[in-house]
Image (cartoon, rainbow, N blue to C red):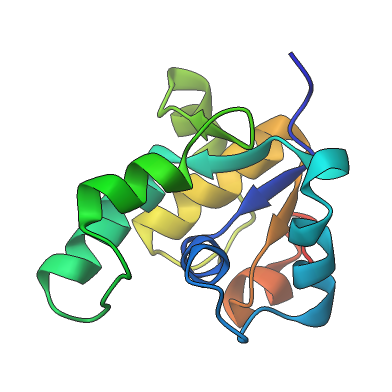
Length: 134
């Protein structure tokens, strides 16, 4: 099983699947070269976040949620990162002052455990230096 080199933050997964122009040029290149860069890591918490955003009417997807999530996490392109004891324990190793959003903490901890670069536009994560970002 190949290692995960790149991990996707929630907004990046949404933008990628919805073919949004909001991806940075570097993110678009990375995701576009999927044969070289797969599998992309996606946390279980990301799926929960997307479900909550749809339920709250904050985002609208091109397909029904269940189909969208199945397509967004299809192997071999994407590998789901489960919420394991190792992921939860890594949260405690995040730098002092890392922001308190539980989903972001899980996503960053998951990327760190995989020694993967996190594709994100979240300034709090980028500025923290807690994980390599693109």
